[in-house]
Image 1: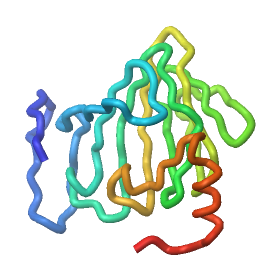
Image 2: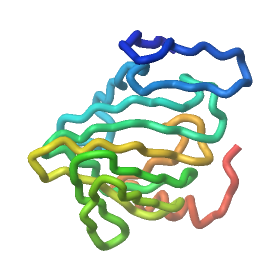
Image 3: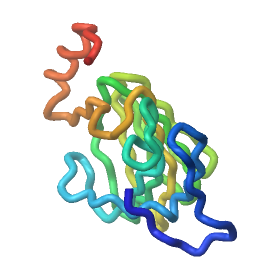
Image 4: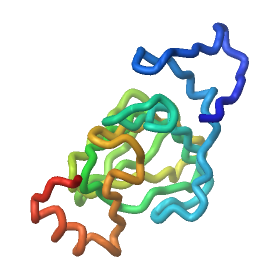
Length: 163
């Protein structure tokens, strides 16, 4: 993993394999989101904890900022639960068939297979931490956008355990 060298009020820690790791999100270069399905508008994301950054085997933690007007289409995950913790700003979090105002301190939880989304229609950036459990990289979550819902639901209902 390439690490940035931000000015922190402490040294940048290095840990031997298998020990606890302390990583500041400012050390992680932002992801190149490119044309990821379902993401629209200006946003910034860092993968803080994942296989590539910390050697995680079952957890992904990221930090994202949705700038005004940015949004994430309705989607769900076949193999991961997701929690999103609002740090600053405001957003609109959707779940199944309803939307909620998301403010600092709020946590949105989406179990496996539950449709959810997020948008920032406000004039200030929305900053949040998100966590996937059960996977080590975002692309292992079984991410499904609306065009795949019917197919994805059929896969999920089979109840098979991925290898």
